[in-house]
Image 1 (cartoon, rainbow, N blue to C red):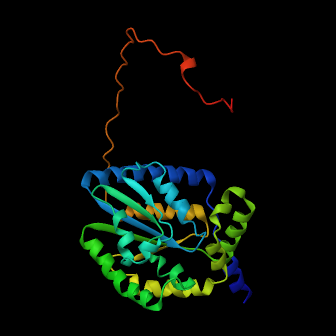
Image 2 (image 1 turned 180 degrees about the horizontal axis):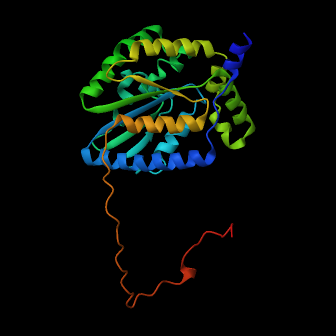
Image 3 (image 1 turned 90 degrees about the vertical axis):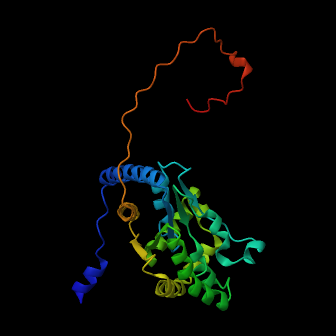
Length: 271
């Protein structure tokens, strides 16, 4: 029994910061290559990021998007639906954000709100929930048939680690905005969210668009693992152009800059 307890309490060793930064740099360079391939081949890519509050979705999205062209790779994080949107076909508000050829969209939460927070918090009726479970797989198969590459990630975090991150957000002023009343309410509904997630997987973990689970108790591990996996799902070639030689600047002939006093400069608050 003592040996079993010891095994359960054993946690993986965190990656060294230098190793993490080096690994992240290499992966982000590959993401730039992937971006150019998506543009070159006219691919349409949608990546969903779902999971519990404070599971680390935003951190991964930030690292993926950090060095990419916002015209090619964009992040979509929709607010709560308006009164008008609540009367629409459920998937309608997401359709305008789907990619055109040569684009990749990162969805920070998605249509799966209905299977998670709306179900648990009672924001939808049971009929609406059941209809979502029936129609979601068909909606996603339709997207795949249309040529969209649909990738779905679920970030899994333990109860203890989520609690630690919530406490950290309370202590750090620049992170307090991340704690919404909905996040606080979710703390008391851990089991309900777990059941909702299991039911969601049972209906929507389909062959055409399977769920990929990311262990995210250690954020740095989750970031590297998720980015590496994303790169493995889309075959791409290196289209890096040859080194560019900057042309010589032409000499100014008769140009006179206007007086500095004619312009309004911001104050040098910092040296």
